[in-house]
Length: 217
Length: 233
Image (cartoon, rainbow over all chains, first blue to last red; front, side, top):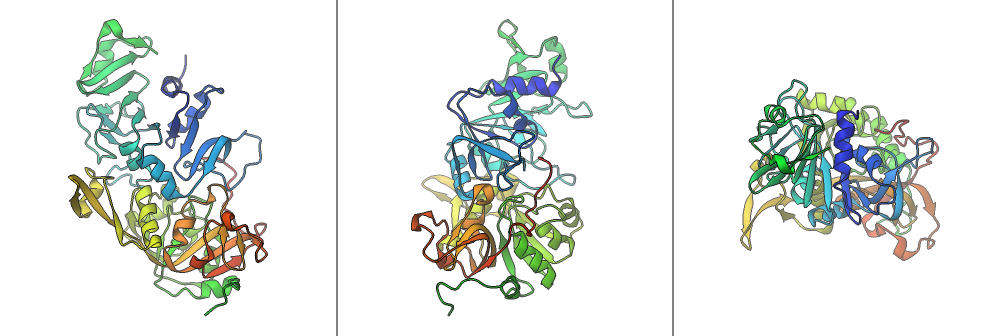
């Protein structure tokens, strides 16, 4: 049995297509490096100023001037380039980054995302999240379906300060894969061994479910 | 007026120009590109009531983290301080004034100062909390927020290579904010790990032209803190 996080990562990695420029958010999304097919031609962008990065081997001596936005030492893939922060965000704002993966405190059925601030508790700053969320065409949210107290994170309406409105395209949790559509939040895949009633009970958002077309993951 | 090809200066003299209360841009994203030697000298010399402009707050025991810890920073203009718990605590206690911007807007505000524009228009963050403090105008039917440029008295820059003229070359992901900040302050002080003889740098290899750089300090990478961490985050 894969762990919840492994299930999320393996499923999310299927959203990366050959030829794409991909940004991996800090934390869980950065582990997607290890779930991409090795022969897949993609360039990984990191907002500190690199296009074409990859993890360094565990026993290798790193180049201390080469990190990704999460602070991990990195190497480069063929075709890589490095650039300043203004160019890096030009790439984001001009939608040259095709897909980005991010965590969430809350995400709702309109695709609103909150992942940068919990007033009074957590406010380390915005970093690149606001621009990535607003400008990258496909935003895949990776998160646990419920918080550590069991409360739903997939909501009818976000309550925390937004990172960006109507920005999420797809939400991948350990329980389901949900697409944000004009009709609402459509469940595409449901986790192995999970039934629709249990999924609905764990979710605050209204879910559109067509059981005959539901995939498993 | 200093001679065009005599930008080298001792680290003590370079940092000695900075007065109390100065506003200072500091290059770097995390450790790469952070001018650690210049910052350690600033700590040693004791300047206080500083306003710092840096992407992040480094970590508590390195770079600007040491200045914050020593109570020398009054205000920090930044994008994300998640790796510095002391900066977060001081912010929450009201001891450190922290102004946060989305990272790309921070970069662009600095870039604007560097290219001589008072500010720019953007649609980033329009329906979010950061919109509350901004003026909005309509341009070609589109709502835009006005983002003023950020300018500073000083910039502290880390380059890999410099020459006597003050031409700078950056390396790897240590580029980040450095070329933007190297244009955006009245007085620009760069540290460099390596120096090239006059005329040795190919003109097309120069990242920051010497016109923007006032002083260059040569730093030995073997003895300078580079913020190297044993672990990957």
